Image (cartoon, rainbow, N blue to C red; front, side, top):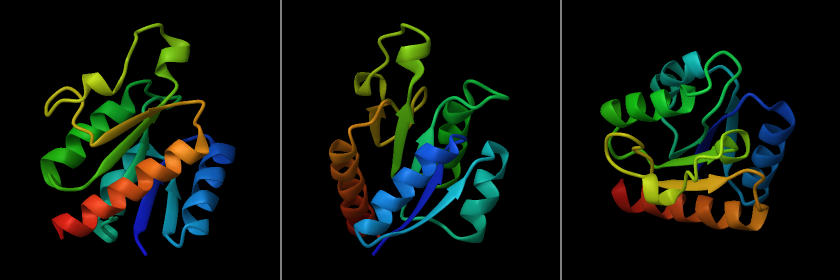
Length: 132
């Protein structure tokens, strides 16, 4: 069983992701406030972070969080979820993952295919087990 931290301001979506994680035997916590993520990680380090990009107060908060987390916890798996391509036609994809601009482990677009999400989470959990 892994402990997962879900960071997303959409309460319905976060609840659905949490339910999915728990149905696979994981423990999950939801954090809607992007400013509280680093404190949450200090309090209890998750095995993986599931992170949205856009928040109402800061449309790029997820990018900033990913960079901060990566600096402090270089081995923490991060799955980025985003609807940025729906909102802004950027063609943003997993090919944009790199160590400085987008330092995440995996990427998945919203609307999320929950089976694909389940597969990505399983991969992150395996990676966390290997790294620890």
